[in-house]
Image 1 (tube, protein in one colour):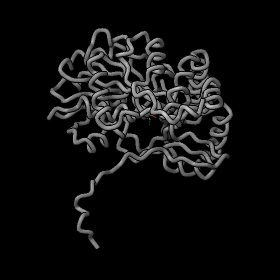
Image 2 (cartoon, rainbow, N blue to C red):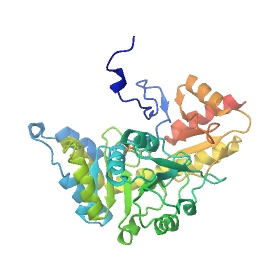
Image 3 (cartoon, protein in one colour):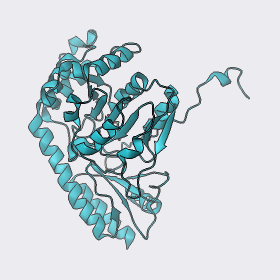
Image 4 (cartoon, protein in one colour):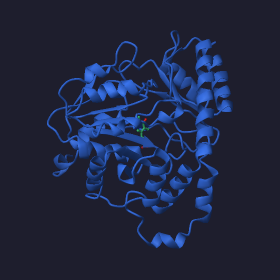
Length: 352
Ligand code: PMP
């Protein structure tokens, strides 16, 4: 029976994240997680953390972590905003920067959380089709809008564009905030951070979930002009001042300070990605060249859904989207070389 208060509940279709599992035998290539553990310096933080400190509130300004990131990127501490994963940072950006009546713009094939935030925060939006090669054309964003948000490299295509691309986007959008979601930038893409000096309306969002193997901690950040960062801080402090906990702040700082480990891990993932793309092509897959830690591929003969199901039966999880234009594709996260060997063994059997 209908309850009398039911019409007051929020109706919303939420974002659906990649399936998680506790099965230790599973090969998990479905959520773009890093196959390697975080820096050993992170483990050391957890081993030695003075738990008596937990009775205090954490630093609401994420001081040490922001300072470490500011040094790492060569920007001011007042240019960095920390959040509980880049999903948190992006959600706050939507609330802080997309306050116009005009629709914001993002690609038709992209991170599927963007339309969900639009719906949650009642931000009007229009999607802009990728071209026939699945690429984003900056000229398509040269029209009145309430803001622009897109990932570079894009997800789930994996296509990464250079500085010229972002600059072209900024040049045709001087009146809007342009958010570049660089979740996958560290695996070979070109970051647009150098453009911050020239464009005060640019916001660069990055995460420690992928390249720093810290998806479980939840650390993301935005880098932008001090004015935009102050706006983000004001919005955050209007709903929860303490988004980052003490342990996370300490562990993430340790990760940033271990640059050698970070670079080595990213290089390993990128090398495995390159080999895996070749192996997929050798099995007949059409592969979109990726600059990320995942590969979008389609097979001309065997439907993606069938490959997905058969891999799942062999305890190998990849991602399959029921979405226009990519619905016959698999998105395969790059695992360790050993995991990829098992994937290719299974694919060879399935395609035989
Ligand atoms: N942006 C893109 C394009 C992503 O794919 C993801 C991962 N789902 C995120 C942002 C959010 O990552 P996190 O919240 O773990 O930082």
